[in-house]
Image 1 (tube, rainbow, N blue to C red):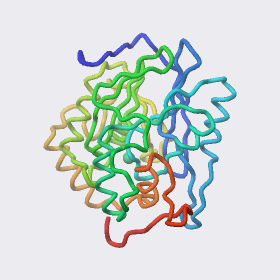
Image 2 (image 1 turned 90 degrees about the vertical axis):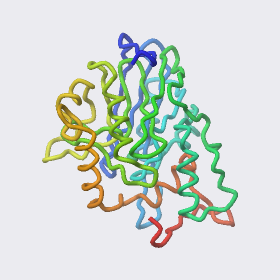
Image 3 (image 1 turned 135 degrees about the vertical axis):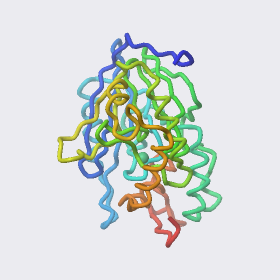
Image 4 (image 1 turned 120 degrees about the vertical axis):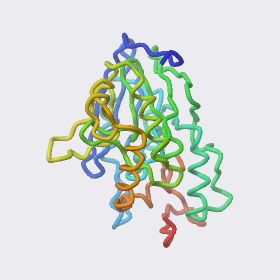
Length: 294
Ligand SMILES: [Fe+2]
């Protein structure tokens, strides 16, 4: 990883927040030498059947940040999530910070702008976000230097964010006994995902890896933290001895059997707008359900 400014001597404090409704783990990542922090992959609560939005998850993060006296510099989205709604704008309205996502959000916006038959008022240029990250982009969380690695495959806009000795992999990897995320969404690709996973696994073996999701396979308790070395040795989809061909065959067959995530329809409409809820022509918050389009 000579191209990336890896610094294993900087160990940020990582506080996890698990959402049992969507099996998402959000994180507050604190610079060890200042009160600056980043919030990674926050969750806005939705009761989709009732069309009701609440902020219990986000309020927990906000209370933590306030209690610790932290300053939010960044609200990082590892990708456009299809299984939960982002609370980034809500947290930003209370605590500040810049919302950032991968540059290829524009590809996702273009694809789903068509699926949801959005009009010209929906910009496909990523301008809803404060920052679009390119591969290798550096940024600062107080004195903590962080950088983004382009890791597509699950979606075309996925980035892994490295902050000191901690990497936030989004849905590029799951815990070793969970394997990997699906690669069959529009713009996803199993071979590309395999290559991105190899990029993550080329980070130092001691690098801490933090998952965006865990489903507690085989009845084990929920976990979210592992290491590069552990994934290389034990990941059931890409660990020792698994070839790219093995992975692509397995992933493609598995994905063909998966149902759509329960919240994909609201999630995409909200998350491709950086977490803002779309409005109807009268300005009321409103979601669509496109028929037979996904
Ligand atoms: Fe995802």
